Structures are given as C-alpha cells and as structure tokens.
Amino acid sequence: MQMRFLPSIITALTALTLTSCSTTTAEQYEATALTSYSWQVKYANNLRGQPQPRIETFANTSVLNRNGLKPPGAVVGPDDRGLWWPTLPPRPSVDEVEQRKRLQEEAGKPELIKDVKYKLTYGVGNTQNTLPTNYDVYRQVVKAYPQRTPLELTLGVNDNSVEKAEPVSK
Image (cartoon, rainbow, N blue to C red; front, side, top):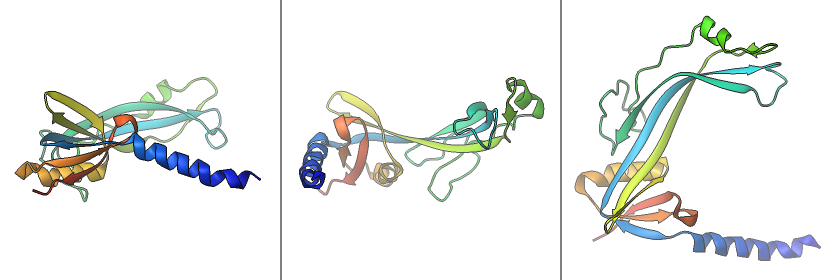
C-alpha cells in the first residue's frame, strides 16, 4: 500500500534537489584548504560501553593552503592529495590528560586527528562569496588558477556550498 507513493516521493525530491541548485561563472576565485592536526582524548565512565564519550581537544596546529601553493609554515607536503601540512602539535602529557579527567571517568589514549576544511571564495560582479566546498572543487581550482581560467560553479542546496567546478570552454 505504501509502495505506490514511493515513485511520487522520489520524483518530488528529485525535482526539489534539481531546482535548489544553481550555477554561476566565476573569473575571480581562490580555493583554500585548512589542514590541521589536533590531539584528542576520549573520557567516559566506561570507554567501551558508553556510546558518546566526552572528547577533549588538546594542542592543535594548522596551515592554510591557497590554490595549491606552498603556504608559509608548512613543513610536510605536498601529500598525495597536493596538500601541505603544519608541524605536529605537542602530544599531551599524562599529567595534562589526568587533569581533565572528571570523577569516576577513565581516559582514553591521546589520538592525533588529521582534518581538512575546504572553502572557495569567488567574485561575481562587485560581490564576493566564501562557501564551503570539497576536495574535487579545490583540485579543479588548483589546475585552473595559474591561467585564471573562468570556472562554472555548481552551488549546493540554497547556494550554501560549492559542489562542482568546471572550466568554461572559450
């Protein structure tokens, strides 16, 4: 009985998705990838049995990649994705880990977390927009940037992100 509504729901969602995205052409743009390392420790009354442990972040370091060029302060890279990385932050000591422990809690081992946040800044007319994006868009900008090739950008739902970038053929 419920299955007969499924095709119409899928059609409505597809139409909504297709009408929610837009495209724009950008001649001025800059892609950034913020690479970072952070030390984190999980705390819980029972680390094995508690589904949502409390997480504490200790030291972290980061470096901002721009258009694929080596940023100041980068010491590692480029890696297999063309990204540059900062120095490792100091690992938290046993004393530091224990200081953040609450009564009845046990502490996990410090874990080094590696993270990347991608953004694209582009100009259309006199306005500049900066939106979150993904690795594929970042790489497309890295390739197009030296020649300043115009890019057609596909924006995500409600124009809140850049989902795709393609060179505009002249």
